[in-house]
Amino acid sequence: MVGPNNVALSIIIPTIGRPSLARTLESILAEGIVPLFDEVIVISDGHQLVSEEIAYDFARRMTLRYITGPKTVPGMPTNRNYAMPVATGTHLMFIDDDDVYVDKALVAVREEVERDWNKIYLFREESKTKRHPWGIVWKEKRVALGNVGTQMIVAPNKRELLGVWGDWKTGDYDFVRSTVDLHPERENGIVWVDRVIANLLD
Image (tube, rainbow, N blue to C red; front, side):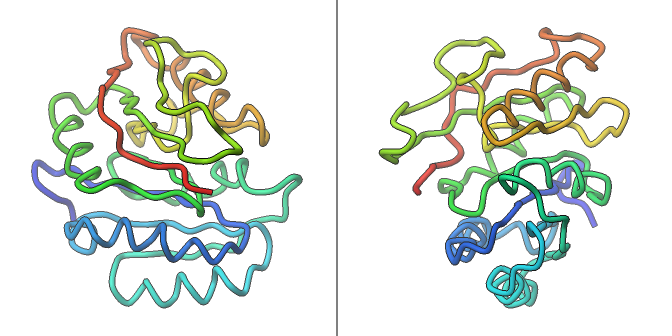
């Protein structure tokens, strides 16, 4: 099933078993439209009992699949590569298990995507943590390390045009850079949207 104008979002969440996964899923469920039109894919970093229990609880209220992924070092980012091939939505989104979407984030994403299905959309995210004290990114309309983040990316689900997630420190940049490099329009295929859709909390 797809939503208005046939847009369906696949939201991929890698997890290392943090209890905060429940908060992340709650922020998605709060959008209201998710149980009807979109899917959530939770992929664990090896066997994670806590995240498995949380995921199965939320699966009663939204379209959610739980996948036990391979154990990675240092964990999590590259597991997105394992989840992408099973996504069935028209567009892919990504969020970590300790972050949340802001109110109406998915509504905003859907409105933008409906303008042009073939573009790569880069929204904004805000860090509210001491560990990542950079405030709001992107700072400028440029694909650069530190200027792009996991939660801001919305990409068409076309296997041949999707890049690869790298390691812990550069994974989001690696994915955006490699995806843009595969896009027929390269940088001209990016739409920079001046709207925060996610908060980094932990």
